[in-house]
Image 1: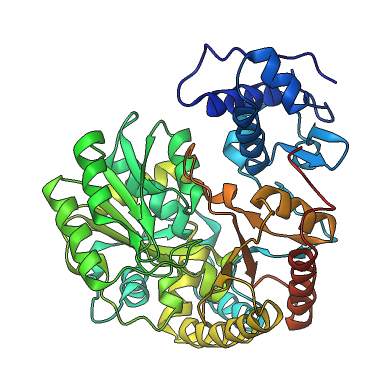
Image 2: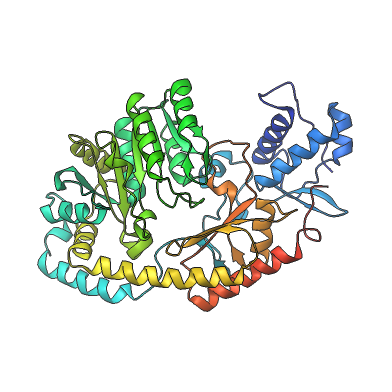
Length: 470
């Protein structure tokens, strides 16, 4: 049992948050090494002169962050870092999120939403043979020219529900993430604040933090970002940019109605806030809703790519920029990535312009829909959000499961899933008691069903015999 004690006079916020923060720091620096037994709650409450309720809430917060695990009758213990990472590397831990950096080979992958395998290899090999034949010199050198078809392809792929960007506003990129970071570095400076929802594609917020930007969190509900809270954040924190997913948000699957999209556009305009609209998952759906860019074209950057709907390994992406920004974003992309490989850019363009990307997207939608039906069948009776053509669901955990504890239990039973902490854009006290199950990277439908049955068994058996905050 450790003799470590916190100093609750230090730090900010409620006592239980200060306690959890200090314990997290002690775990990351090795003062509370993996395997250490934390003091019994009643003893620690006596030692630091707080109520046992404060200690209980702090321990629960550590559970949610995936830092400790409790067992009935044995107490609460510090968990090892993923893949045996050193506990004294808090920088790496803060950047990596909650996923193992290298996924184990013996687990069912429910932690990825890359496009499913529907026979892309045959198409890829044919297109690459054409490119190597037609551009032998180009693929052997740095990219010095940017053929017009690269921009036409981007305009075609980003077009959505009557909105189509002009080719001259397009920047081809190494995937959607690179597109987002290129825009972010052009329009903001170190120290500027970027608005994110509490739960979102947090790799952007972590990358933004690495680039010196700060996070401003905005409230959202089942219909996406709340306009009144977005305005509050704009007034109080003066952000320079907001990252939004207006259709089938990751991980909550929220979709903004038209009036809310208009409101977000109007608020951004009034407060001079730039918008990045990520439509990666929206492009998979049957949504007929207009993009936010329709209402605020002068300040919205629209991003999409091939990773979720065609082939993640191609690293194909595009961003449509407001007028006069494309050249700046193109330069930023080169500085951030080292440059766009001719082979990948030409491959992405040919995929789209040949019609093969649209055909494969249709095949992927069908395969995803079949897997969604499996998930809905195998998890029938439990509370989750799903969309017919989106390769993940957002599962509500029954009492007394905690998100991080359930993730560990699933891992122990052979399934990799994402807990809610993976999607927290910043240090947030918001708790949803949910996990995301992404099932497009599983080998086949049989494996999807096998993984879902494992998840169901855990849900039905409950956490009583597995874990406790005692």
